[in-house]
Length: 284
Ligand code: F3S
Image (spheres, protein in one colour):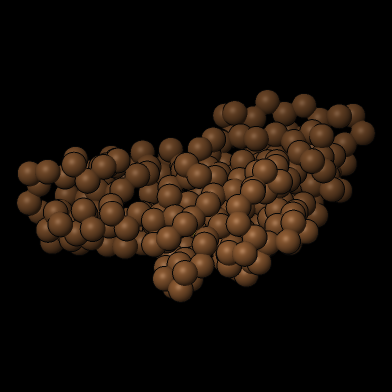
């Protein structure tokens, strides 16, 4: 049995930076209590470890009322402009670990919107990253979650639009969505803001899944990039498993299986990937 682990599996640059930021603050004696705005990553093991070290997850700025000293870390997805302002008003130390690729989208949306363009964001409306992106528009902004919504989009064709994408969007679906806008005659400036890490991860997963007999995708159930990886892999390999940790794996290999592929979302630590790889290697 051959086991192939994707090179681009696991922590991406932005997630690594955000997690390291929190661990660095723990070592800093002047940081006071440490809070993360939302779980720093979609991984219960890492969040649990941080909790043991005293890091608290908050979900709204109100939870900080009455606290005079402490540090709040903004995770790689970023936050809305209003939340950023409210956090600054608390007087606590704010450490912004928003991924630079997300920041770049904020900047594009802010600039294009101030020039009078309407903004289209291809992504999931209720994902925190998309909520943040949307908040940087000062004029009309629409969120489109894929080709089907693009087909239903009936707005003014004279308007100039700038279209951006959630960093972790499925790149094939992004292309399909963009084609629909173009074919329907919209005057649209397309900026593909799917980040490189996502792009590489998805292309590699797609390539491995198309030749694997069994594919294992490791990632948090709340992690949008992991769910998209699962979607991509299961389209190409019917025996695709989606697990958070080795404990969830109830692997049954077809008799003819010769290749097992493994990939993982951006918030999966290396040790979990290694555990799964070793398990498959030793037991099958
Ligand atoms: Fe940043 Fe891309 Fe990771 S946007 S947080 S490098 S998935």
